[in-house]
Image (tube, rainbow, N blue to C red; front, side):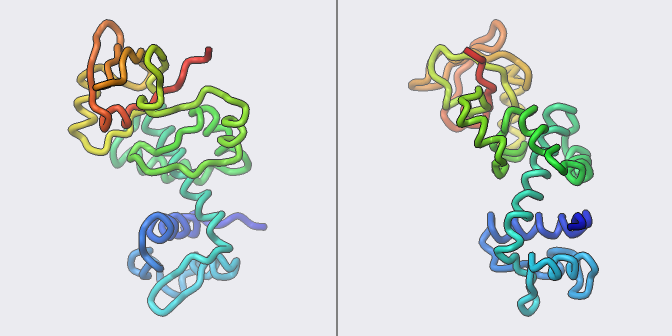
Length: 218
């Protein structure tokens, strides 16, 4: 089957975010930036991925798997551009939008494995898991977990930060909590005490959940 156009993929992505992850029954044409007779929308209708109900475009069950994968590819691309390439902000998002369309024919699984199967994008949104994620868990491969999942005495490499706002991100960065740095968790209660380099810090549960660690291989 011929692959979907990039615009059609973006429509599916928006439908997934606004309806499956959100609470909308469907999306208005204006929200999707399409018209009822647009080629991209007709492309999705022909595959029974979506249907029109009045003034709304609704995602059909037949289109859910493909929509989920478009979201997965985009959020993996965000991890690549922002965490590995260090391109942040609007530019990082724009680059991710371009790169996601290249993650085809198993490339998304290779990237996901390279990133050690992250569970969230840089904005804290969930990355739908792929088969590679389930296989890694079954094989017991060291994955990426929130700092709260480490045991006292465990160490690992900081994989990425999922800070929900700029102030939290700035606070973590001022501590030297940066991707690629080694972190050792000394204590979990009553607060999380950890070492990065020669410095020791204490954070609460909320902030600890936003630090994601690539566990060291034992």
